[in-house]
Image (cartoon, rainbow, N blue to C red; front, top):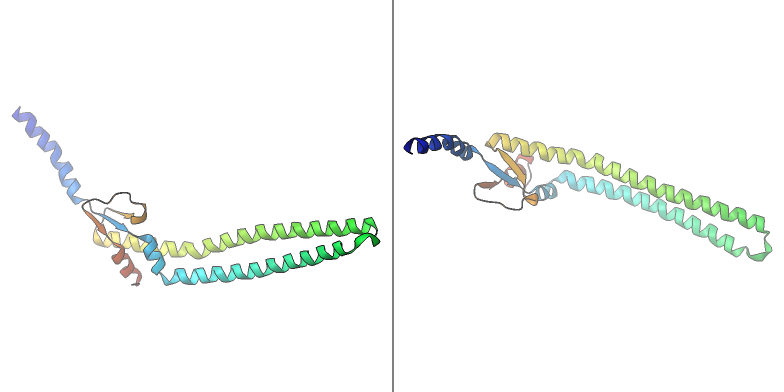
Length: 166
């Protein structure tokens, strides 16, 4: 019996020592991203580009409405073939507007990715540096953690310091 107890203690000892060596941390990436000046600059660029596209879209819509009103104003005095040609032109304009909308959505998504991936990478590099420098086994995103128990350290201030932000 005593022999079994000694063997059990010897087997559990490495697990106990390993558990004590683990160091866990959390970081509020949303808070850090909000404080990063690069994010504000990227959002401004994206808003400016969106505004330019919106202005162009409004112009296309206005051109379409003007052309549509012209066709409606023709009345019965214009031959049917001319009216049909004008309606075909309207359909082509509408297709160009829809195509423009799709291209804009793709361009904005591409630009957003282009602007924000380097910012996210900078954040990840800072988190990795804090983890390495401070001996953390794992650093989790505080926004995705369902439970934070004892032995967890909030490293958000360390990451902000690493990035040079308040």
